[in-house]
Length: 248
Ligand code: ADP
Figure 1 (tube, rainbow, N blue to C red):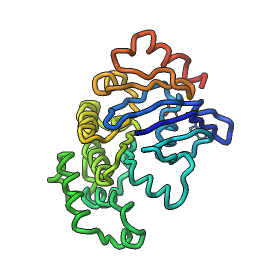
Figure 2 (cartoon, rainbow, N blue to C red; figure 1 turned 120 degrees about the vertical axis):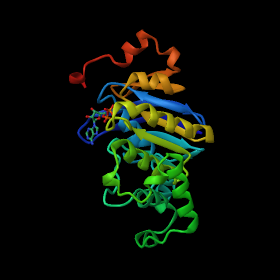
Figure 3 (cartoon, helix red, strand yellow; figure 1 turned 90 degrees about the vertical axis):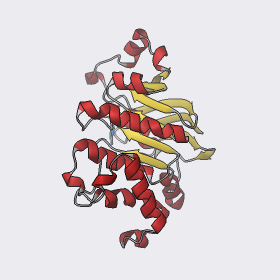
């Protein structure tokens, strides 16, 4: 479903954040991306949904090359890709429901969204998504009054109402109580049962091994490991984590 070919990203200051990355991803895979800080994990995710523009290569999403999509094509593409951020990126003065339903904006023109003219279907989908993440009772609570774990679940519900084919989560457990990390990972993994592909950039190796079906290891912009948790031997781990942060 997703094919990445010769993907590279060089930032204007000359930093080569991604170096000729090649891989294929099937529908319904749950993938963890690991590597040292600065290895290129976020850049990889951000290229997939085009928050970063690749410098070279192809990203085929269901056969369509999205690496250089612009304008309306890019907007349509973003609708098919949900993104969950480390810092949640919620509008904290709005309720959980209002935050979640904003995930439907990609389906409407800008003015309609601006005036909150959502359809009955949008509302039903927002409630469904909040229920799926276990927050239906907090629907009318302002995001600012929710705990970190609850805010992240709202952010996940917001990505879910987009009905994406691909969900990307960039360090989704980094800003929450470590005890809740497993809940968030389990929730993300459950979406794969519906055929959604989920890619999680995760700092904690234990979480990657416990939850992911496939692990991608980056080192200095290169994909140096691509396999199952079982295949990630101690030696492979050393390859992924080789070099200090200061070298990067
Ligand atoms: P990770 O997510 O693995 O910590 P990143 O993808 O954030 O790594 O960063 C990869 C490399 O690209 C790092 O060297 C980082 O400093 C650099 N980088 C990231 N964003 C930018 C940017 N906007 N401009 C220049 N360099 C950047």
